[in-house]
Image (cartoon, rainbow, N blue to C red; front, side):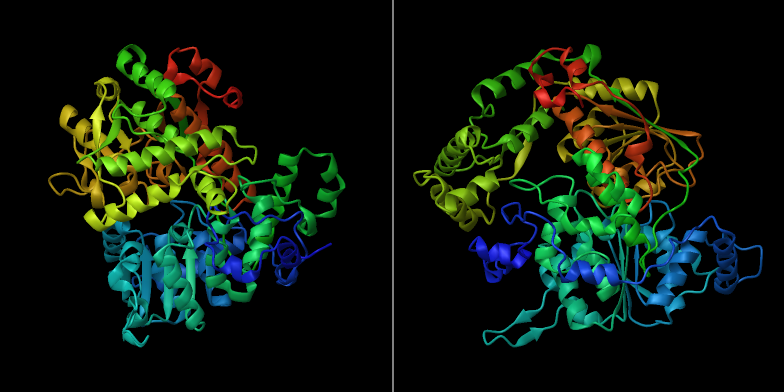
Length: 632
């Protein structure tokens, strides 16, 4: 059987070709028949194993007590105590000089990061990196800890700052360094990555800069923690494991082998058939292998994912959440427009289906764009470019979008997105009569004119339906309304006279969301869906966008005083239900099957949702689904 490299060469693809492409791009068409027993798999199988540490064991409790006594500045009673999982993580980092910690949201990651420099004996040039929204919160939390616990000075940096142009290395015309990059200037001895899933995109500037710094400074200790190590792919965190554990990283670091593993293991296959399980069977126990062939393909994949998850957790330097579920109830149920349903929205959906364009004549290129505009339509608005772009730009875009949409409908290669179709046209597989070239030229001219590829958009309101729906919910509940659109949040705040916490978690008066004391509010998911501790303020949530693991954990976490956290998910159209089931059945199931970071909240929450067929019974084009959706 050919190795992955030999298979690529047989396809006429060289290693140089692959290195010139973006590894995580959806345009990648690299496929293998089976996962081979390549050097990376052999390396991983040879990594020493140890039993998965048990935080409920007596030894873990004793370790937590011991470290609490050593790290506290004051005598007992202590102002809090280390949790067993925190103690195990600190011990593991001390033993391996590195740590990858898939610890569930609310599992005590901030405390681990505070104590790690003391445990590792690295008291100078410690760098902590987190999402920008978390910077004020982590600084405030550590400020409360300093009078009671031993710690060191830690520099706090955001991923957004690290991604900025000011953080890059600058060169002169001859290639000599004029100004060192931010990481080089800070020269950390210890790098702490909180919410490390922010580094999932290997094309992102912050990821590239961290990767280069790690390669150039192998002596620097890296520690990463996240409650969602995997979203839909093992590629989300394989490289981060490499930064933290080096040659003992339990996932492939070689690009080609990682692609082969991902083709079999990931939540969704790329373009074309999946790779066969092949040598990944070596991770299964004899009992697993005995009945493997009798299982359905999805059950086989789940078994292999679980086996690789065990291999990861048994690797020295990896500590994941093994604690029991949070002793707080969690329910998620549907919330429909009911008697507030407006016919103008149904008309918008009907026109979108028939004419395949927006009300201003903008053509839609593929199913992704249709779904995006149907999603906003279900929230009573659509997005219009303002100021309007030049007619030449609109003509070029509509020409390409119309051609692309028709080509996707009728092609036999399984191409179903605009990105893949662009690749196919560039490869000469289709003759688009210059539509793509014309569109790309128009984009270049628009960027030269305005600095943007396309104009900014503003919300065009179809009706007051969503305002009336939210108003009725607030009449019955005191809670938090979650949105992912600035336009929607601004309008709700204006109409309902409640604060909207958006950029940096602040409302129009500058008040931070964690300072909110009583009453309902609106929250941006992008600004507040990660890192916030909101459990002491709210226990009821209305979601105008499907909730994920991180967002649910803002109120469903340790310290929640109510016995149950209740969540309502608004279903204004079929896309809202489809997005929820995609998050639950694909992302949450995928993460849970590996067993890293604890069981996902979406997997174990008590859920009351209609099927797509039941939703269609509501009638109207807004609730029309695909046949495959009926069993969701």
